[in-house]
Length: 312
Image (cartoon, rainbow, N blue to C red; front, side):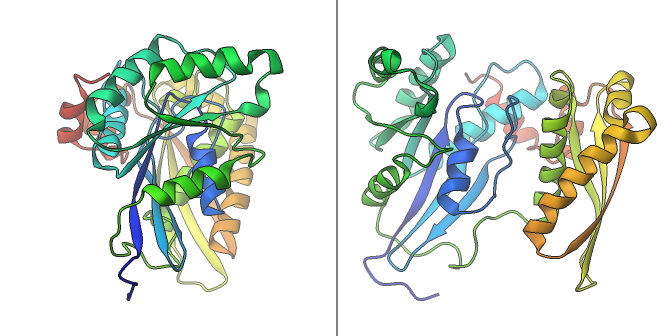
């Protein structure tokens, strides 16, 4: 992998509260889905990498989980993952939902970013400008700018693509000179097996009642791509109580079929061939509060749990 001596490359962390649009931004910049998206909080549970490469630079976006108050072991993993992204990035993007005024969580986030930023550049990306009424543009933008007076800021719409090229150009300007980290045709560090499980969870997030997704996890138990025309996937959907199991399955298996159909279509786009997707549902009582169960579901390890326990 030969690169010119003035090649620029670096990690760009996207941090912010849940549902600010971080994953939508990463997918828009990369040009394909590398991070799942839904209207529900806690959609992103691990640091998702999205890689964008040209002849002169490579941006490695780190889509971090939304920062929130840690109430149990899973939350501590999310906070620890976001902390790690913030600490290791070359450039930090604070993504905020400008259609709403800042809340107490945004003030805590501002303190956290200030304490961890060091000499790195902070870009405040005020997303969802398409949802912002004209009368609220100045009050809302001024309220966010007051939280980080030294940060550069830009109004964007991830859904419409407004100003995304401008933000990307500024990111590239701030990247350090360095060697290419990933092959030019690689867009994420996640194996297709992991992405398939995430797409099943995304389908569930879109289809289920508000209270169910927080206690839902997906583990891909079999991923067989030996057949050049077909990928066979068997996945277990875990929920944290019996009532949620009934909701996920639905009457006569109707809801599980809806989830499976939606996920299968998305996975087929990803793998570019037909997919057989088998889904089962199992109860794992209180898994979000058990460090070992959280790790078994693929979210962090004990070290990350401890490092995030006192944060935010």
